[in-house]
Length: 88
Image (cartoon, rainbow, N blue to C red):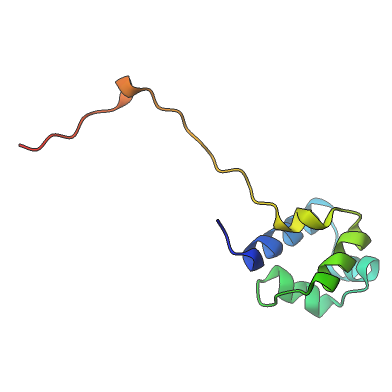
């Protein structure tokens, strides 16, 4: 599990880039300064709940999106594919 600061940084950055928005555009939509947005995206600032709320409302996304973790990649392996390790 990632720490909350890293999750928020990754999710905000991904959201902004997926929408092809600049920091300046996000700043205008949310009322949060470009400097603060950059610090959040770089993991250098822990945003307050109020700041995250402004960003979520401005970008019209749920507040919880910023805490969402990517699903871990799972690979299924059949027992017949495993080579036993023996002590000789």
